[in-house]
Image 1: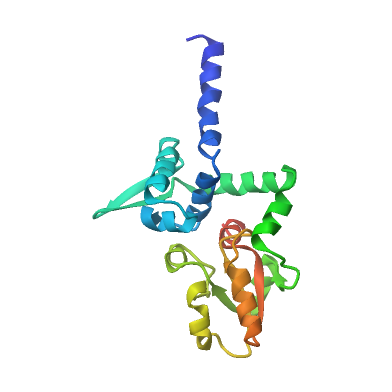
Image 2: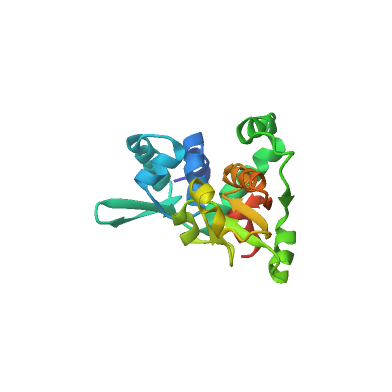
Length: 215
């Protein structure tokens, strides 16, 4: 093989990673898998696709080397192939946020108006955790909390929060977080807590960003 042909094959192979992510549904799957390992049926429910369609997308990610699998009985669990994949996703998202025209408008159309929600930065949350004057609420699904969470956080999935409000100490300042800047679970939690007369704010992004900053 000549030098030029070898170079072409090298860059074509490198481009396979970009091709694997060249689908909104596959990007969404990676966004969920950044949180931790999940079985196919749960991933399908998270992205609103059939199990068959979700499996096809996951197989494409598997062939590209971005995810790996393990079997437990009849269930197949998927996870990211390594920390570099999570870093790639966060970097790709950051680049899109800076350079893709209209992305901010699309994001606002999805997450809604956040101007009325109090927000806290990661640095401020770290300070308040050291001071011990805040309750941190993880409102992601329980499997994601089990896979990794901010130390000291309390797990109350958003679908259970209304029924479990009494578990949130009355009078405490609450910081809710979820998957990242495009996750609306924390928004919903802050609105619900505020309506109930509780002081609440959302973390500026989510657990993956917090974990990356503390790695």
